[in-house]
Length: 406
Image (tube, rainbow, N blue to C red; front, side):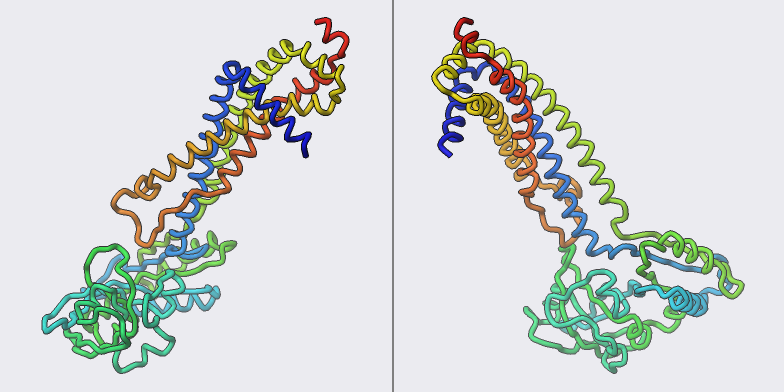
């Protein structure tokens, strides 16, 4: 242990003596480590943002489907055949999950006034498919569509408009419109967009049965979000488009698009690989400069090394003393580069750069990944070891007698 510490002290002393010679090369190492570490860290941070987005976009492979007649002969077309055809498709291909969703308006009585509340009518499976979480209360249960008082889930804004500062348990509200009814609030969720607008969720079948205008409901076909086995995603997407394009002799528009973060992982991995490769190339060039400077410095230290060998210094001690000069130098430069990278990225909002003021709801600013700092330090130490290897081997081969006469 004392030998290693002694070698490190000697290496530091030599760097202080020859600081002007190695300064420019160390600047290159610091800059390249900073660039490589920053890009690696930014890639990891973007991956974390992507994972947060994927939680709301669905697991692989999640698709959105929309159907509508191309040539509707009636003012309000009957879409029940299309719904039946889709249900048959789901059963035939054993689609893992499917959930309907449509946007509607609920005329809710709040403090004696009628308020139009933007409502998303969904299936019970929507929470799992879309990654929705309630803050208090509960999500819809499997048999909630059988309740005589249709359940709804409201956001915090609507909860306060209904006279409840915090969630204390289920309560009822009056809903007017084509078919007035009394609904039961069973849970709450945060206002994701910070819009300050009242919103709610309601079961799709409950909306059709209790609230929706019969004339409008008859011609309403919802957006459908489905899960497909990733290995069959392309095939089933094609089958959805072709098999549902004509139903009972009626041509339909079929729009199917993938929602999950498909392919972004490969893109980020390729991006990090390319930039890391460029950083390693810059580190390699800096290492060559260090090798040249170390060799020049070694030639000026031949007499010193010869005297040390004559006084009993072993080849091993001389080898590590010379090589550690480069290792200590590049490690110090790498540490400086990592510190600059941390300071820069911690003072820049990645979400603000990506989305500006219109960031998606629920996203949390990712922290600086420790793995990127470790990669930068390891790379700098490795480059220092490689740069010091050649001068160290040359120092070991120096003969003491010839060195003293030099």
